[in-house]
Image 1 (cartoon, protein in one colour):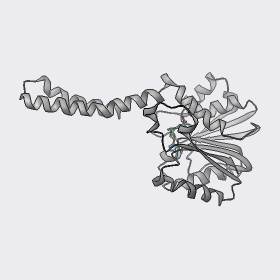
Image 2: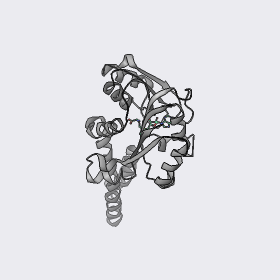
Image 3: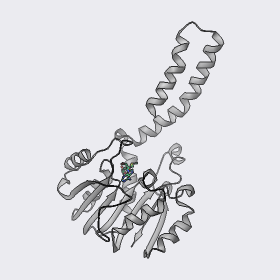
Image 4: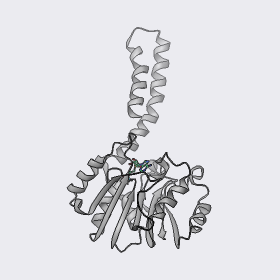
Length: 240
Ligand SMILES: C[S@@+](CC[C@H](N)C(=O)[O-])C[C@H]1O[C@@H](n2cnc3c(N)ncnc32)[C@H](O)[C@@H]1O
C-alpha cells in the first residue's frame, strides 16, 4: 500500500515539473496534497506497529497472555504466529511449557517459518518452540491436544474460511477440556462475527465452560489516533 501511495503521488507531481498550463499545475498539487493525507495516516500506523517501535506490539501480545488463565504446564499453541512474536513471549513467560506456532505464511505478510525459528533462537527459547506450516481453518492436530491456545489478530485475515466463528471453533477443537484460551481480534466487527453477545452465547453453546470478553482499547494505553483503528478489537478468553 505504501508503494502504491508513493507511485500515485509521483504520477501526480511529475507532470508539474514540466511547462504545463498553470491551472492544471495547481489542480495536480491540490490532488497530490489531498492524496498525502491518508498516506500520512498509513505511515503513522506503520510506525506504531513496526519493529522500530515495538512497545505497542508488546503491549498487545502481553494483553493476550495476561488474559490467559493458565498455569504454564504442558503444551500451548499460537494460531497464525506470523514472525513468532506471541509464541516466543508465551514460551518466555511460561518456562515449563512447550509452544507450537502455526501459520500459512502466505504472500500477504512478510513472515516465514525460518524467521520464526531465528527469532526463537535469538530469544533463547528455540528448544521449546516448534513452528509448522498449516491453516487456522484446518489445524493438523487431534482434538484436545493442547493445554492452552492463543491467537492475535489472525482470524479476520484468514481467507480460506468465510465463517469466522468456524475458525474460533477449530482453534477450540484442539484445546483440552478445562484448557485455557485467549484470542485477540476484531470481535466487535459485526459484519465479521455478528453481534458480540450472540457470538459469546454461540461459543458457550459449544460446551465451553467460561467465555469472557474485554476491549483492547480499555486495557492498554493506546495513542488517540490509533484508538479509532483498534476500536473493534478485543480479547475473547476463558476456559473450555
Ligand atoms: C496481523 S498478522 C499477526 C501475526 C501474529 N499473530 C502477531 O501477533 O504478530 C496475521 C497473520 O495471520 C496469518 N494468517 C492468515 N491466514 C492464515 C491462515 N489461513 N492460517 C494461518 N495463519 C494465517 C498471516 O500469515 C499473518 O502471519
